[in-house]
Amino acid sequence: MDEAILVYTTWPDAETAGAAAQAAVEARAAACANIMAPIASIYRWEGEVERAVETPVLFKTTAAAAERLRALILARHPYDLPCFIALPVDAARSHPAYLAWLTAESGSPPPPASGEGS
Image (cartoon, rainbow, N blue to C red; front, top):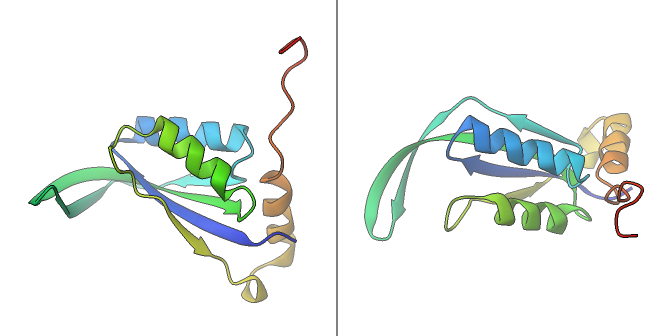
């Protein structure tokens, strides 16, 4: 079974977060995405301390699908430098059936719809 990972990202609002989450699951770059409640972020950017309200998303995926997920997020993200943090999952302490589902649903991208590319 492929290694399960969690990917943490932040978005400027729920709309962009939701669109990215939907796209990632549809593309099978993630099995699931949890859009969380808005958070207050304080960070240093270009020498200044900034404050923003952001919407975090936690993507459940595999190490094999992580590069596709990163490419999808970077292509869709409005920030110059989006957060993309991948964390390993402790498989020994996780639910094996859930990890099997996660691996199956984060597999190869779906084939193109019939008639595409013909």
